[in-house]
Image 1 (tube, rainbow, N blue to C red):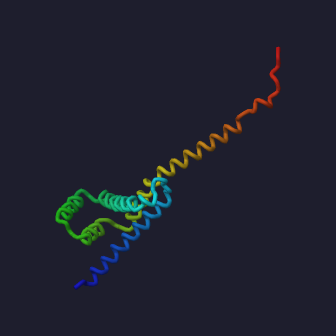
Image 2: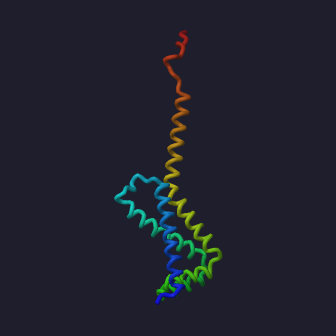
Length: 148
């Protein structure tokens, strides 16, 4: 028989994974990577979901003290259920939801930075080209040079 707590935990995990999948879908859409085509979309999506989860975990671990990391290692070696790991992090990290948001923002920035950088380079090149056009002198309309 399934108890109410198990159902609640399952719903929470499902909601978390749906939220991460939605986050990843928006990232893919925002990046507009020409290499992400319908044939590769599901692979890219799965990889990004994995990377987002890793980024959150790495952020959490970076916030732990050395003693807490040792305790976490023991839990992982014991292959405890996810619920127990979640409880561990909630007990060691204040404002877990804020830290998840921080990890997601950091991931988003790292993922979108190459696109932003390319856009900035394109804008700079376009502005430079416009400046050259303004500075370019039409030699056909110059008065003749004085002859000595």
